[in-house]
Amino acid sequence: MIAWPDELCNGLARCGLFVVRFDNRDVGRSTHLRNVPPPRLQPNRTAALRRITVPTLVIHGLDDPLVAPSGGLAIAKAIPNSRFVGFSGMGHDLPRALWPELVREIAALTALGEHRGRQGPLSG
Image (cartoon, rainbow, N blue to C red; front, side):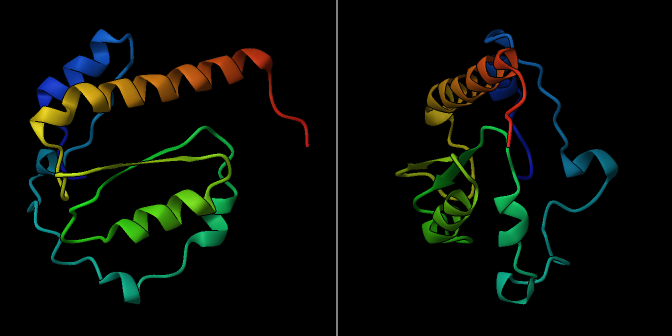
Protein backbone atom coordinates (compact mmCIF):
# COMPACT_ATOMS: atom_id res chain seq x y z
CA MET A 1 0.00 0.00 0.00
CA ILE A 2 1.52 3.26 -1.04
CA ALA A 3 -0.79 5.75 0.68
CA TRP A 4 -3.47 5.47 3.32
CA PRO A 5 -6.07 8.20 2.78
CA ASP A 6 -6.56 10.67 5.64
CA GLU A 7 -10.22 9.73 6.09
CA LEU A 8 -9.34 6.05 6.55
CA CYS A 9 -6.63 6.92 9.10
CA ASN A 10 -9.07 9.20 10.92
CA GLY A 11 -11.60 6.36 11.08
CA LEU A 12 -8.99 4.12 12.68
CA ALA A 13 -8.08 6.89 15.13
CA ARG A 14 -11.76 7.29 16.07
CA CYS A 15 -11.69 3.61 17.07
CA GLY A 16 -8.97 4.51 19.56
CA LEU A 17 -6.09 3.22 17.44
CA PHE A 18 -2.78 4.97 16.97
CA VAL A 19 -2.04 5.31 13.28
CA VAL A 20 1.52 5.64 12.07
CA ARG A 21 1.52 6.08 8.33
CA PHE A 22 4.41 6.02 5.93
CA ASP A 23 3.60 7.46 2.57
CA ASN A 24 6.54 7.35 0.19
CA ARG A 25 5.53 10.76 -1.13
CA ASP A 26 6.71 12.14 2.23
CA VAL A 27 10.30 11.60 1.13
CA GLY A 28 9.79 12.87 -2.39
CA ARG A 29 9.96 9.50 -4.13
CA SER A 30 7.79 8.55 -7.05
CA THR A 31 4.69 6.59 -6.11
CA HIS A 32 5.47 4.26 -9.01
CA LEU A 33 7.42 1.23 -7.86
CA ARG A 34 9.77 1.09 -10.83
CA ASN A 35 12.75 -0.28 -8.90
CA VAL A 36 10.96 -3.20 -7.26
CA PRO A 37 11.73 -6.50 -8.98
CA PRO A 38 8.78 -8.65 -10.06
CA PRO A 39 7.64 -11.26 -7.51
CA ARG A 40 9.24 -14.11 -9.45
CA LEU A 41 12.64 -12.47 -8.93
CA GLN A 42 12.20 -11.71 -5.22
CA PRO A 43 13.39 -14.06 -2.49
CA ASN A 44 10.96 -16.52 -0.96
CA ARG A 45 9.87 -15.09 2.39
CA THR A 46 7.71 -18.01 3.55
CA ALA A 47 10.09 -19.11 6.33
CA ALA A 48 10.15 -15.60 7.76
CA LEU A 49 6.35 -15.35 7.57
CA ARG A 50 6.04 -18.59 9.57
CA ARG A 51 7.92 -16.93 12.44
CA ILE A 52 5.31 -14.18 12.90
CA THR A 53 3.63 -14.67 16.26
CA VAL A 54 1.32 -11.66 16.51
CA PRO A 55 -2.30 -11.58 15.35
CA THR A 56 -2.20 -10.86 11.64
CA LEU A 57 -4.83 -9.74 9.16
CA VAL A 58 -4.14 -10.08 5.45
CA ILE A 59 -6.38 -7.73 3.47
CA HIS A 60 -6.41 -8.28 -0.28
CA GLY A 61 -8.36 -6.96 -3.23
CA LEU A 62 -9.92 -9.83 -5.13
CA ASP A 63 -9.67 -7.73 -8.30
CA ASP A 64 -6.04 -6.71 -7.75
CA PRO A 65 -4.35 -6.39 -11.17
CA LEU A 66 -0.83 -6.42 -9.65
CA VAL A 67 -0.96 -9.27 -7.13
CA ALA A 68 -3.37 -12.16 -7.62
CA PRO A 69 -5.54 -13.09 -4.63
CA SER A 70 -3.59 -16.34 -4.44
CA GLY A 71 -0.59 -14.25 -3.33
CA GLY A 72 -2.52 -12.85 -0.38
CA LEU A 73 -3.86 -16.29 0.47
CA ALA A 74 -0.34 -17.74 0.38
CA ILE A 75 0.82 -15.05 2.81
CA ALA A 76 -2.09 -15.77 5.14
CA LYS A 77 -1.46 -19.51 5.00
CA ALA A 78 2.21 -19.01 5.86
CA ILE A 79 1.48 -16.87 8.95
CA PRO A 80 0.24 -18.98 11.86
CA ASN A 81 -3.27 -18.08 13.04
CA SER A 82 -3.62 -15.26 10.52
CA ARG A 83 -6.87 -14.24 8.91
CA PHE A 84 -7.40 -13.51 5.21
CA VAL A 85 -10.08 -11.06 4.14
CA GLY A 86 -10.62 -10.60 0.41
CA PHE A 87 -12.76 -7.77 -0.92
CA SER A 88 -14.64 -8.01 -4.21
CA GLY A 89 -14.38 -4.84 -6.26
CA MET A 90 -11.07 -3.91 -4.64
CA GLY A 91 -7.92 -3.87 -6.69
CA HIS A 92 -4.51 -2.63 -5.50
CA ASP A 93 -6.17 0.28 -3.71
CA LEU A 94 -8.48 1.12 -0.83
CA PRO A 95 -11.88 2.05 -2.30
CA ARG A 96 -13.69 4.66 -0.21
CA ALA A 97 -16.82 2.49 -0.06
CA LEU A 98 -14.84 -0.18 1.83
CA TRP A 99 -13.27 2.13 4.43
CA PRO A 100 -15.85 1.43 7.14
CA GLU A 101 -15.34 -2.33 6.73
CA LEU A 102 -11.55 -1.94 6.65
CA VAL A 103 -11.69 0.09 9.86
CA ARG A 104 -13.84 -2.63 11.51
CA GLU A 105 -11.45 -5.38 10.41
CA ILE A 106 -8.35 -3.53 11.62
CA ALA A 107 -10.02 -2.54 14.90
CA ALA A 108 -11.03 -6.18 15.49
CA LEU A 109 -7.44 -7.26 14.87
CA THR A 110 -6.07 -4.76 17.38
CA ALA A 111 -8.65 -5.86 19.96
CA LEU A 112 -7.42 -9.43 19.50
CA GLY A 113 -3.85 -8.28 20.05
CA GLU A 114 -4.82 -6.32 23.15
CA HIS A 115 -6.64 -9.35 24.58
CA ARG A 116 -3.64 -11.54 23.90
CA GLY A 117 -1.33 -8.95 25.49
CA ARG A 118 -3.37 -9.02 28.72
CA GLN A 119 -3.00 -12.79 28.82
CA GLY A 120 0.78 -12.50 28.77
CA PRO A 121 3.31 -13.98 26.37
CA LEU A 122 2.69 -17.34 24.82
CA SER A 123 4.76 -20.16 26.17
CA GLY A 124 6.40 -22.45 23.74
